[in-house]
Length: 507
Image (tube, rainbow, N blue to C red; front, side):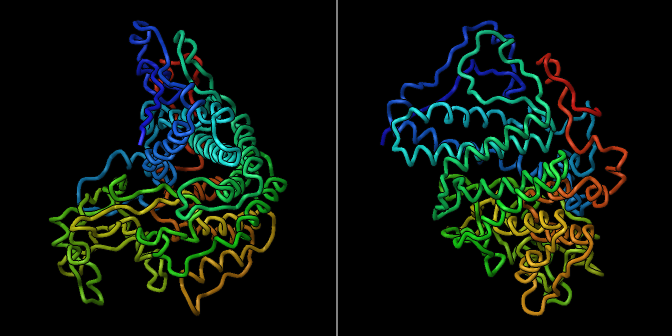
Protein backbone atom coordinates (compact mmCIF):
# COMPACT_ATOMS: atom_id res chain seq x y z
CA UNK A 1 0.00 0.00 0.00
CA UNK A 2 1.33 3.39 -0.94
CA UNK A 3 1.75 5.82 1.88
CA UNK A 4 1.33 9.52 1.19
CA UNK A 5 2.72 11.97 3.68
CA UNK A 6 0.78 15.23 3.55
CA UNK A 7 2.07 18.00 5.79
CA UNK A 8 1.96 21.73 5.98
CA UNK A 9 5.34 23.08 7.02
CA UNK A 10 5.47 26.75 7.88
CA UNK A 11 9.08 26.65 9.05
CA UNK A 12 7.74 25.00 12.18
CA UNK A 13 6.21 28.25 13.36
CA UNK A 14 2.90 30.07 12.93
CA UNK A 15 1.04 32.84 14.64
CA UNK A 16 -0.43 32.27 18.06
CA UNK A 17 -3.87 33.20 16.74
CA UNK A 18 -3.67 30.26 14.37
CA UNK A 19 -3.27 27.95 17.35
CA UNK A 20 0.37 27.10 16.62
CA UNK A 21 3.54 28.24 18.32
CA UNK A 22 5.12 31.51 17.30
CA UNK A 23 8.85 31.68 16.54
CA UNK A 24 9.51 35.12 15.16
CA UNK A 25 13.28 34.78 14.99
CA UNK A 26 13.11 31.59 12.95
CA UNK A 27 10.62 33.16 10.56
CA UNK A 28 13.05 35.99 9.90
CA UNK A 29 15.93 33.60 9.24
CA UNK A 30 14.36 31.41 6.58
CA UNK A 31 12.39 31.73 3.39
CA UNK A 32 8.81 30.62 4.12
CA UNK A 33 7.53 27.82 1.94
CA UNK A 34 4.91 25.13 1.88
CA UNK A 35 5.56 21.41 1.66
CA UNK A 36 1.90 20.50 1.13
CA UNK A 37 1.91 18.82 -2.24
CA UNK A 38 -1.45 20.09 -3.40
CA UNK A 39 -0.92 18.71 -6.88
CA UNK A 40 -0.73 15.19 -5.42
CA UNK A 41 -4.10 15.56 -3.68
CA UNK A 42 -5.56 17.00 -6.88
CA UNK A 43 -4.20 14.15 -8.98
CA UNK A 44 -4.46 11.05 -6.81
CA UNK A 45 -7.64 9.81 -5.13
CA UNK A 46 -5.59 7.78 -2.64
CA UNK A 47 -3.77 10.91 -1.50
CA UNK A 48 -7.07 12.73 -1.10
CA UNK A 49 -8.44 9.81 0.91
CA UNK A 50 -5.39 9.88 3.18
CA UNK A 51 -5.84 13.61 3.77
CA UNK A 52 -9.50 13.06 4.65
CA UNK A 53 -8.81 10.15 7.03
CA UNK A 54 -6.12 12.19 8.76
CA UNK A 55 -8.70 14.78 9.82
CA UNK A 56 -10.29 12.25 12.15
CA UNK A 57 -6.93 11.23 13.56
CA UNK A 58 -6.19 14.90 14.22
CA UNK A 59 -9.62 15.47 15.77
CA UNK A 60 -8.92 12.63 18.21
CA UNK A 61 -5.92 14.56 19.54
CA UNK A 62 -8.35 17.10 21.03
CA UNK A 63 -10.23 14.64 23.23
CA UNK A 64 -8.63 15.98 26.41
CA UNK A 65 -9.31 19.60 25.41
CA UNK A 66 -12.96 18.90 24.57
CA UNK A 67 -13.51 17.03 27.83
CA UNK A 68 -11.81 19.69 29.94
CA UNK A 69 -13.60 22.64 28.36
CA UNK A 70 -16.99 20.97 28.57
CA UNK A 71 -16.84 19.59 32.08
CA UNK A 72 -14.11 20.79 34.42
CA UNK A 73 -15.57 24.25 35.01
CA UNK A 74 -18.85 22.75 36.21
CA UNK A 75 -19.88 21.52 39.65
CA UNK A 76 -19.19 17.80 39.10
CA UNK A 77 -15.55 17.58 40.21
CA UNK A 78 -15.34 20.61 42.50
CA UNK A 79 -13.95 20.18 46.04
CA UNK A 80 -13.49 16.50 45.36
CA UNK A 81 -12.12 13.69 47.51
CA UNK A 82 -9.00 12.03 46.11
CA UNK A 83 -6.16 9.87 47.39
CA UNK A 84 -3.09 11.42 45.77
CA UNK A 85 -1.86 14.97 45.33
CA UNK A 86 -4.42 17.16 43.60
CA UNK A 87 -4.15 17.97 39.90
CA UNK A 88 -3.57 21.72 40.16
CA UNK A 89 -4.06 22.30 36.44
CA UNK A 90 -7.60 20.93 36.44
CA UNK A 91 -8.29 22.67 39.74
CA UNK A 92 -7.87 26.01 37.97
CA UNK A 93 -10.98 25.20 35.98
CA UNK A 94 -13.39 24.10 38.70
CA UNK A 95 -12.17 26.73 41.17
CA UNK A 96 -12.32 29.38 38.41
CA UNK A 97 -8.89 30.58 39.46
CA UNK A 98 -8.61 32.42 36.16
CA UNK A 99 -7.29 35.86 35.32
CA UNK A 100 -5.38 37.73 32.64
CA UNK A 101 -2.16 36.47 34.20
CA UNK A 102 -3.42 32.99 35.06
CA UNK A 103 -4.75 31.58 31.79
CA UNK A 104 -5.58 27.88 31.98
CA UNK A 105 -5.50 27.22 28.22
CA UNK A 106 -3.17 29.01 25.82
CA UNK A 107 -3.11 29.41 22.04
CA UNK A 108 -6.86 28.86 21.61
CA UNK A 109 -6.36 25.29 22.78
CA UNK A 110 -4.49 24.54 19.55
CA UNK A 111 -7.83 24.28 17.74
CA UNK A 112 -6.71 26.42 14.81
CA UNK A 113 -4.33 23.68 13.76
CA UNK A 114 -7.37 21.43 13.33
CA UNK A 115 -9.27 24.19 11.53
CA UNK A 116 -6.36 24.65 9.12
CA UNK A 117 -6.45 20.97 8.19
CA UNK A 118 -10.21 21.09 7.67
CA UNK A 119 -9.83 24.24 5.57
CA UNK A 120 -7.30 22.39 3.42
CA UNK A 121 -9.81 19.66 2.63
CA UNK A 122 -12.56 22.19 1.91
CA UNK A 123 -10.28 24.05 -0.49
CA UNK A 124 -8.82 21.07 -2.36
CA UNK A 125 -11.61 18.51 -2.53
CA UNK A 126 -13.88 20.30 -5.03
CA UNK A 127 -11.17 19.58 -7.63
CA UNK A 128 -9.85 16.28 -6.22
CA UNK A 129 -10.29 13.08 -8.32
CA UNK A 130 -13.10 11.62 -6.19
CA UNK A 131 -16.45 10.31 -7.35
CA UNK A 132 -19.11 12.96 -6.87
CA UNK A 133 -21.04 11.21 -4.10
CA UNK A 134 -17.91 10.71 -2.02
CA UNK A 135 -16.73 14.27 -2.65
CA UNK A 136 -20.02 15.75 -1.46
CA UNK A 137 -20.12 13.53 1.62
CA UNK A 138 -16.55 14.36 2.63
CA UNK A 139 -17.14 18.08 2.19
CA UNK A 140 -20.41 17.85 4.12
CA UNK A 141 -18.51 16.24 6.99
CA UNK A 142 -15.81 18.91 6.94
CA UNK A 143 -18.27 21.80 7.06
CA UNK A 144 -20.07 20.14 9.96
CA UNK A 145 -16.83 19.56 11.85
CA UNK A 146 -15.62 23.12 11.23
CA UNK A 147 -18.90 24.43 12.62
CA UNK A 148 -18.38 22.28 15.73
CA UNK A 149 -14.83 23.56 16.29
CA UNK A 150 -15.83 27.20 15.87
CA UNK A 151 -18.79 26.60 18.21
CA UNK A 152 -16.35 25.25 20.80
CA UNK A 153 -14.17 28.34 20.34
CA UNK A 154 -17.16 30.69 20.59
CA UNK A 155 -18.46 29.11 23.79
CA UNK A 156 -14.98 29.19 25.35
CA UNK A 157 -13.62 32.62 24.36
CA UNK A 158 -16.48 34.55 22.79
CA UNK A 159 -15.20 36.40 19.74
CA UNK A 160 -12.25 34.66 18.08
CA UNK A 161 -10.29 35.06 14.83
CA UNK A 162 -12.00 33.64 11.76
CA UNK A 163 -9.98 31.86 9.12
CA UNK A 164 -11.56 29.83 6.34
CA UNK A 165 -8.51 29.45 4.09
CA UNK A 166 -5.61 27.09 4.77
CA UNK A 167 -2.22 28.64 5.47
CA UNK A 168 0.16 27.45 2.78
CA UNK A 169 2.96 30.00 2.90
CA UNK A 170 4.20 32.92 4.98
CA UNK A 171 5.80 35.88 3.24
CA UNK A 172 6.07 38.04 6.36
CA UNK A 173 5.13 37.86 9.99
CA UNK A 174 2.41 40.48 9.52
CA UNK A 175 0.57 38.04 7.25
CA UNK A 176 -0.14 35.97 10.34
CA UNK A 177 -1.72 38.71 12.45
CA UNK A 178 -5.46 38.34 12.77
CA UNK A 179 -7.96 40.23 14.93
CA UNK A 180 -10.77 38.64 16.89
CA UNK A 181 -14.11 38.69 15.08
CA UNK A 182 -17.22 39.51 17.08
CA UNK A 183 -19.27 36.67 18.60
CA UNK A 184 -22.01 37.52 16.12
CA UNK A 185 -19.63 37.10 13.17
CA UNK A 186 -18.41 33.76 14.51
CA UNK A 187 -21.99 32.56 14.98
CA UNK A 188 -22.82 33.64 11.43
CA UNK A 189 -19.98 31.45 10.11
CA UNK A 190 -21.11 28.51 12.27
CA UNK A 191 -24.66 28.71 10.96
CA UNK A 192 -23.45 29.11 7.37
CA UNK A 193 -21.27 26.01 7.70
CA UNK A 194 -24.19 24.06 9.14
CA UNK A 195 -26.37 24.90 6.15
CA UNK A 196 -23.56 24.10 3.72
CA UNK A 197 -23.12 20.75 5.44
CA UNK A 198 -26.83 19.93 5.20
CA UNK A 199 -26.96 20.99 1.56
CA UNK A 200 -24.06 18.71 0.68
CA UNK A 201 -25.53 15.77 2.60
CA UNK A 202 -28.61 16.26 0.41
CA UNK A 203 -30.93 14.48 2.80
CA UNK A 204 -28.78 11.37 3.18
CA UNK A 205 -29.19 9.83 6.63
CA UNK A 206 -26.61 7.08 6.11
CA UNK A 207 -24.71 6.15 9.25
CA UNK A 208 -21.50 4.09 9.34
CA UNK A 209 -21.36 0.79 11.20
CA UNK A 210 -19.18 2.53 13.77
CA UNK A 211 -20.34 6.09 14.23
CA UNK A 212 -16.88 7.63 14.11
CA UNK A 213 -17.30 9.88 11.07
CA UNK A 214 -19.49 12.96 10.90
CA UNK A 215 -22.99 12.57 9.46
CA UNK A 216 -26.13 14.51 8.62
CA UNK A 217 -27.51 13.44 12.01
CA UNK A 218 -24.45 15.01 13.67
CA UNK A 219 -24.95 18.26 11.76
CA UNK A 220 -28.63 18.39 12.72
CA UNK A 221 -27.83 17.71 16.38
CA UNK A 222 -25.18 20.42 16.34
CA UNK A 223 -27.68 22.74 14.66
CA UNK A 224 -30.12 22.18 17.50
CA UNK A 225 -27.38 22.85 20.05
CA UNK A 226 -26.19 26.00 18.25
CA UNK A 227 -29.62 27.54 17.77
CA UNK A 228 -30.58 27.00 21.41
CA UNK A 229 -27.37 28.83 22.33
CA UNK A 230 -28.02 31.72 19.95
CA UNK A 231 -31.64 31.88 21.04
CA UNK A 232 -30.54 32.11 24.68
CA UNK A 233 -27.43 34.27 24.47
CA UNK A 234 -27.49 36.14 21.17
CA UNK A 235 -31.00 37.53 20.84
CA UNK A 236 -32.44 34.81 18.62
CA UNK A 237 -35.27 34.00 21.02
CA UNK A 238 -38.24 31.91 19.95
CA UNK A 239 -37.32 31.98 16.26
CA UNK A 240 -34.02 30.22 16.98
CA UNK A 241 -35.62 27.80 19.45
CA UNK A 242 -38.09 26.76 16.73
CA UNK A 243 -35.23 26.09 14.30
CA UNK A 244 -33.49 24.03 16.97
CA UNK A 245 -36.64 22.03 17.68
CA UNK A 246 -37.18 21.23 14.01
CA UNK A 247 -33.59 20.03 13.55
CA UNK A 248 -33.70 17.87 16.67
CA UNK A 249 -37.05 16.35 15.75
CA UNK A 250 -35.52 15.29 12.42
CA UNK A 251 -32.81 13.40 14.31
CA UNK A 252 -35.25 11.92 16.81
CA UNK A 253 -37.28 10.46 13.95
CA UNK A 254 -34.36 8.57 12.39
CA UNK A 255 -35.07 4.82 12.70
CA UNK A 256 -31.39 3.91 13.09
CA UNK A 257 -31.10 5.91 16.32
CA UNK A 258 -32.53 5.43 19.79
CA UNK A 259 -31.68 4.86 23.44
CA UNK A 260 -29.79 1.71 24.31
CA UNK A 261 -31.87 -0.40 26.68
CA UNK A 262 -28.87 -0.83 29.00
CA UNK A 263 -26.92 2.33 29.82
CA UNK A 264 -23.53 0.58 30.11
CA UNK A 265 -23.85 -0.76 26.54
CA UNK A 266 -23.42 2.75 25.15
CA UNK A 267 -19.77 2.76 26.20
CA UNK A 268 -18.94 -0.94 25.92
CA UNK A 269 -15.91 -1.19 23.57
CA UNK A 270 -17.12 -4.61 22.39
CA UNK A 271 -20.50 -3.18 21.29
CA UNK A 272 -19.49 -0.36 18.97
CA UNK A 273 -20.98 -1.75 15.76
CA UNK A 274 -24.39 -0.26 15.02
CA UNK A 275 -24.58 1.22 18.50
CA UNK A 276 -27.92 2.96 18.01
CA UNK A 277 -27.29 5.60 20.65
CA UNK A 278 -24.07 6.97 19.13
CA UNK A 279 -24.36 9.78 16.58
CA UNK A 280 -20.69 10.75 16.41
CA UNK A 281 -17.79 9.60 18.60
CA UNK A 282 -14.02 9.85 18.74
CA UNK A 283 -12.69 6.42 17.86
CA UNK A 284 -10.20 4.40 19.91
CA UNK A 285 -9.03 0.95 18.85
CA UNK A 286 -6.46 -1.61 19.92
CA UNK A 287 -3.19 -1.27 17.95
CA UNK A 288 -4.27 2.18 16.77
CA UNK A 289 -4.89 4.55 19.69
CA UNK A 290 -6.29 4.19 23.18
CA UNK A 291 -7.54 6.71 25.69
CA UNK A 292 -5.16 8.40 28.06
CA UNK A 293 -7.37 11.28 29.16
CA UNK A 294 -8.77 9.91 32.40
CA UNK A 295 -5.65 8.82 34.28
CA UNK A 296 -6.34 11.37 37.04
CA UNK A 297 -9.77 9.82 37.64
CA UNK A 298 -8.51 6.30 38.42
CA UNK A 299 -6.34 4.88 41.25
CA UNK A 300 -2.81 3.53 41.56
CA UNK A 301 -2.08 -0.14 42.06
CA UNK A 302 -0.99 0.23 45.71
CA UNK A 303 -4.17 1.98 46.75
CA UNK A 304 -6.24 -0.46 44.72
CA UNK A 305 -5.24 -3.13 47.21
CA UNK A 306 -6.20 -1.14 50.30
CA UNK A 307 -9.40 0.57 49.17
CA UNK A 308 -12.77 -1.13 48.88
CA UNK A 309 -16.05 -0.95 47.02
CA UNK A 310 -19.44 -1.50 48.70
CA UNK A 311 -18.42 -2.09 52.35
CA UNK A 312 -21.98 -1.27 53.38
CA UNK A 313 -24.10 -3.31 53.17
CA UNK A 314 -21.38 -5.53 51.73
CA UNK A 315 -19.86 -7.77 50.79
CA UNK A 316 -16.86 -5.45 50.49
CA UNK A 317 -14.59 -5.97 47.52
CA UNK A 318 -11.05 -4.68 47.14
CA UNK A 319 -10.69 -2.30 44.20
CA UNK A 320 -7.99 -4.50 42.68
CA UNK A 321 -10.27 -7.52 42.88
CA UNK A 322 -12.77 -5.75 40.64
CA UNK A 323 -10.16 -4.05 38.43
CA UNK A 324 -6.86 -5.92 38.84
CA UNK A 325 -5.08 -4.19 35.96
CA UNK A 326 -6.28 -0.60 36.29
CA UNK A 327 -3.54 1.94 36.89
CA UNK A 328 -3.77 5.67 37.31
CA UNK A 329 -3.79 8.44 39.87
CA UNK A 330 -6.66 9.61 42.05
CA UNK A 331 -5.95 13.34 41.67
CA UNK A 332 -9.49 14.50 40.84
CA UNK A 333 -12.70 13.51 42.60
CA UNK A 334 -16.24 14.34 43.57
CA UNK A 335 -17.22 15.96 46.83
CA UNK A 336 -19.09 13.99 49.45
CA UNK A 337 -22.17 16.11 48.73
CA UNK A 338 -22.07 15.32 45.02
CA UNK A 339 -21.57 11.62 45.70
CA UNK A 340 -24.56 11.63 48.05
CA UNK A 341 -26.67 13.51 45.50
CA UNK A 342 -25.88 11.08 42.70
CA UNK A 343 -25.84 7.79 44.59
CA UNK A 344 -29.37 6.63 43.91
CA UNK A 345 -29.25 2.81 43.92
CA UNK A 346 -32.14 2.69 41.44
CA UNK A 347 -30.29 4.77 38.85
CA UNK A 348 -28.57 2.32 36.49
CA UNK A 349 -26.32 5.12 35.16
CA UNK A 350 -24.29 5.61 38.31
CA UNK A 351 -22.34 2.37 38.69
CA UNK A 352 -21.23 2.33 35.02
CA UNK A 353 -20.21 5.99 35.40
CA UNK A 354 -18.27 5.95 38.69
CA UNK A 355 -17.74 3.83 41.77
CA UNK A 356 -17.06 5.09 45.28
CA UNK A 357 -13.88 3.85 47.00
CA UNK A 358 -13.84 3.47 50.79
CA UNK A 359 -11.08 3.09 53.35
CA UNK A 360 -11.07 -0.11 55.36
CA UNK A 361 -11.23 1.64 58.74
CA UNK A 362 -13.96 2.33 61.26
CA UNK A 363 -16.95 3.94 59.61
CA UNK A 364 -15.57 3.19 56.14
CA UNK A 365 -14.85 6.83 55.19
CA UNK A 366 -14.99 7.73 51.51
CA UNK A 367 -11.54 7.89 49.93
CA UNK A 368 -12.60 9.03 46.48
CA UNK A 369 -14.29 7.87 43.30
CA UNK A 370 -13.09 5.93 40.29
CA UNK A 371 -14.46 7.00 36.90
CA UNK A 372 -15.61 3.73 35.34
CA UNK A 373 -17.46 4.97 32.25
CA UNK A 374 -14.35 4.81 30.07
CA UNK A 375 -12.36 2.16 31.92
CA UNK A 376 -12.13 -0.14 28.92
CA UNK A 377 -11.61 -3.88 29.20
CA UNK A 378 -9.02 -6.54 29.90
CA UNK A 379 -7.33 -7.82 26.75
CA UNK A 380 -4.40 -10.25 26.70
CA UNK A 381 -3.45 -9.42 30.26
CA UNK A 382 -3.59 -5.62 29.94
CA UNK A 383 -6.20 -2.99 30.69
CA UNK A 384 -7.15 -1.72 27.23
CA UNK A 385 -8.73 1.73 27.24
CA UNK A 386 -10.48 1.51 23.88
CA UNK A 387 -13.88 3.02 24.65
CA UNK A 388 -15.04 5.53 22.08
CA UNK A 389 -15.77 9.06 23.35
CA UNK A 390 -19.21 10.34 22.28
CA UNK A 391 -19.42 13.85 20.89
CA UNK A 392 -23.16 13.47 20.36
CA UNK A 393 -25.49 10.61 21.23
CA UNK A 394 -29.24 10.10 21.18
CA UNK A 395 -29.66 11.17 24.82
CA UNK A 396 -28.23 14.56 23.78
CA UNK A 397 -31.00 14.88 21.23
CA UNK A 398 -33.72 14.16 23.79
CA UNK A 399 -32.42 16.61 26.38
CA UNK A 400 -31.68 19.31 23.78
CA UNK A 401 -35.21 18.87 22.45
CA UNK A 402 -36.58 19.11 25.98
CA UNK A 403 -34.62 22.34 26.41
CA UNK A 404 -35.91 23.82 23.15
CA UNK A 405 -39.49 22.97 24.13
CA UNK A 406 -38.98 24.41 27.61
CA UNK A 407 -37.76 27.70 26.17
CA UNK A 408 -40.69 27.75 23.76
CA UNK A 409 -43.11 27.29 26.65
CA UNK A 410 -43.99 23.74 25.61
CA UNK A 411 -44.17 20.58 27.72
CA UNK A 412 -40.73 18.82 27.75
CA UNK A 413 -41.76 15.94 29.98
CA UNK A 414 -41.94 13.22 27.30
CA UNK A 415 -38.24 13.51 26.45
CA UNK A 416 -37.19 13.91 30.09
CA UNK A 417 -39.16 10.80 30.96
CA UNK A 418 -37.61 8.79 28.13
CA UNK A 419 -34.24 9.42 29.78
CA UNK A 420 -35.61 8.61 33.25
CA UNK A 421 -37.33 5.41 32.11
CA UNK A 422 -34.04 4.01 30.85
CA UNK A 423 -32.24 5.14 34.00
CA UNK A 424 -34.66 3.83 36.61
CA UNK A 425 -36.62 1.12 34.82
CA UNK A 426 -40.08 -0.09 35.67
CA UNK A 427 -41.83 2.02 38.24
CA UNK A 428 -39.74 5.15 37.70
CA UNK A 429 -41.15 8.44 38.94
CA UNK A 430 -42.24 10.38 35.86
CA UNK A 431 -41.65 14.09 35.55
CA UNK A 432 -44.68 16.33 35.14
CA UNK A 433 -44.57 19.61 33.27
CA UNK A 434 -43.93 22.57 35.55
CA UNK A 435 -42.70 26.14 35.33
CA UNK A 436 -39.97 27.00 32.86
CA UNK A 437 -37.46 27.15 35.71
CA UNK A 438 -38.60 23.80 37.12
CA UNK A 439 -38.44 22.20 33.69
CA UNK A 440 -34.96 23.56 33.06
CA UNK A 441 -33.74 22.33 36.43
CA UNK A 442 -35.14 18.86 35.70
CA UNK A 443 -33.26 18.81 32.38
CA UNK A 444 -30.04 19.92 34.05
CA UNK A 445 -30.44 17.25 36.72
CA UNK A 446 -30.54 14.62 33.99
CA UNK A 447 -27.48 16.16 32.33
CA UNK A 448 -25.66 15.87 35.65
CA UNK A 449 -26.40 12.16 35.97
CA UNK A 450 -26.41 11.09 32.33
CA UNK A 451 -23.17 12.60 31.03
CA UNK A 452 -20.60 12.25 33.82
CA UNK A 453 -17.14 12.28 32.23
CA UNK A 454 -18.44 13.17 28.76
CA UNK A 455 -17.63 16.88 28.73
CA UNK A 456 -21.25 18.10 28.69
CA UNK A 457 -22.22 19.52 32.10
CA UNK A 458 -20.58 22.97 31.77
CA UNK A 459 -22.01 23.50 28.29
CA UNK A 460 -25.47 22.45 29.49
CA UNK A 461 -25.34 24.97 32.33
CA UNK A 462 -24.05 27.70 30.04
CA UNK A 463 -26.62 27.03 27.33
CA UNK A 464 -29.44 27.02 29.91
CA UNK A 465 -28.56 30.58 30.91
CA UNK A 466 -26.21 32.42 33.23
CA UNK A 467 -28.50 32.17 36.26
CA UNK A 468 -28.31 28.36 36.10
CA UNK A 469 -24.52 28.49 36.08
CA UNK A 470 -24.41 30.66 39.18
CA UNK A 471 -26.98 28.46 40.92
CA UNK A 472 -24.91 25.30 40.31
CA UNK A 473 -21.34 26.52 40.86
CA UNK A 474 -20.13 27.38 44.35
CA UNK A 475 -20.26 31.21 44.59
CA UNK A 476 -16.93 31.10 46.41
CA UNK A 477 -15.46 30.23 43.03
CA UNK A 478 -17.81 31.95 40.58
CA UNK A 479 -20.45 34.52 41.46
CA UNK A 480 -22.87 36.58 39.41
CA UNK A 481 -20.57 39.58 39.86
CA UNK A 482 -17.92 37.72 37.83
CA UNK A 483 -19.96 36.98 34.72
CA UNK A 484 -16.96 37.88 32.56
CA UNK A 485 -15.36 34.61 33.75
CA UNK A 486 -17.91 32.59 31.82
CA UNK A 487 -15.48 32.90 28.92
CA UNK A 488 -11.71 32.54 29.13
CA UNK A 489 -8.96 35.15 28.76
CA UNK A 490 -6.10 34.90 26.32
CA UNK A 491 -2.50 34.89 27.46
CA UNK A 492 -0.07 37.78 27.63
CA UNK A 493 2.21 35.96 25.19
CA UNK A 494 -0.63 35.83 22.64
CA UNK A 495 -1.22 39.57 23.03
CA UNK A 496 2.50 40.30 22.72
CA UNK A 497 2.90 38.12 19.65
CA UNK A 498 -0.06 39.41 17.66
CA UNK A 499 -0.69 43.18 17.94
CA UNK A 500 -4.17 42.77 16.40
CA UNK A 501 -5.42 40.69 19.31
CA UNK A 502 -7.24 42.24 22.28
CA UNK A 503 -7.99 40.72 25.65
CA UNK A 504 -11.33 39.05 26.37
CA UNK A 505 -13.72 41.68 27.83
CA UNK A 506 -13.63 41.81 31.62
CA UNK A 507 -10.04 40.66 31.99
